[in-house]
Length: 178
Image (tube, rainbow, N blue to C red; front, side, top):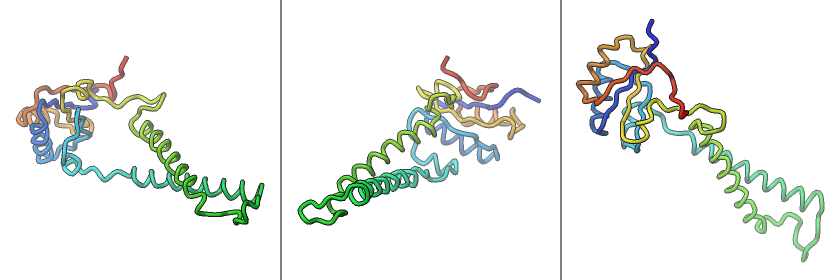
């Protein structure tokens, strides 16, 4: 059994990359991931990537902030230290809308920053997911799992026909920055 974990096809042009993805899918080759230095319109649909759940996560963080604001206001001004100011009720809801809005935005923004760092492997102690350092600079890289696709010569030929500039057989899962 081979030590090769991934076959990397380097492309110099995004159009060649999209053509290469079509050729690989026609040959029933399962693509692990694609790394590009810039966003490419339509690549998610071509690879079958589902819509992101970040909107739902942001809503949950915002809802947590709103509930925290309402709970704090109720506890501080109604339960713990009720004060009669100008004959207003203890829990005057319209007065506390700005506070609830601010805590909603604060929780959502900090939660999304933390989620971004965690999901993209940027949190301290996590290994970065970079197949080839040139993928963040000037190359478009298609990564193919070599264990799921045993016909390496067939894959190499498909990549060459599609216009790959370079084909590498990666033996390590991730490249470190050290």
